Image 1 (tube, rainbow, N blue to C red):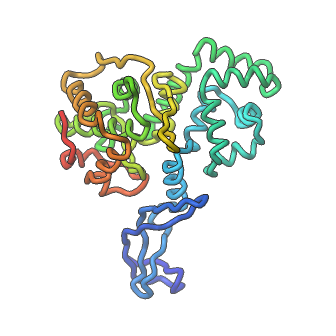
Image 2 (spheres, rainbow, N blue to C red; image 1 turned 120 degrees about the horizontal axis):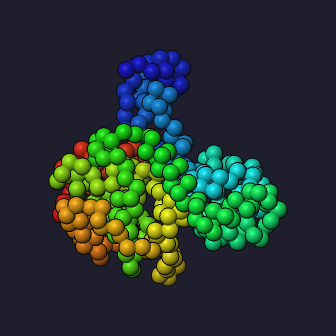
Image 3 (cartoon, rainbow, N blue to C red; image 1 turned 45 degrees about the vertical axis):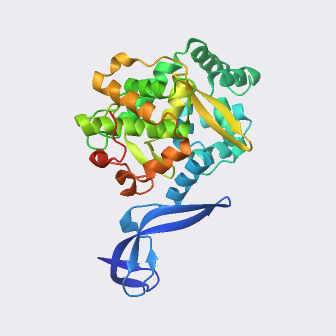
Length: 335
């Protein structure tokens, strides 16, 4: 191929190569797997608009995953669930609107602000803030939010809005295991894997992945229709943070608990409801049972390491969707 080389300042012969691009964000080293163009005259490698990738944004995405921070999509999904404007949510949080706007547009929030966002996403916390700050919303808007919270009518509105947007992104194909995303099946799968004593959130996304891919391997269709993305800690449902917010704050299917050992603190997800097993076939139930049993004693870090060795993960780059075509090559084959 030929590409403009910024070092030679001219168009030269070049080749696309795999590379690991280092970034430092807030003092944390982030390695971004990306494609670069290598000039065959000077030997320098560089990003090119022809590759259609934003490496800086890829680094921010990897940092959020590593630091376990809410994504801009998750924040916007929460506001949409209650039809809150940026100004209204900023007032409830006691922030300037510019601060919230920056976070929704891709800026990295600090840990204190992330905790504040996660807290107010809990229905009981939002209700308390609306009551404590009566001037944050106009009287009609305050009454509407409180009415939704009391009657949980926001659930169906948020459900329809979120699922419509999520499903509109793609048709059932090899990326979704030839099934349209089914929110009820996905919810029941999460409830199954998170039964007491619960599982760490990073482990849950691997359990979901192994269940969907193993079912596809044997019956050429996934269980939930979810797409899975290549993330630094391993495969995870695409837009995982927004889906998790939906399961915890909107449908109240899962609750988050903090656990610790020495200086380490992590989040464990525990089911609030019994899984609706009537949604699944006998084969799907066997797959779900086999995945839960196989990884029963596996720690979150260990299952992440296993998933990193899977061919579908190794063949993709950060943020890319892992095609179900790799299901036949799975190292962990269960039923």
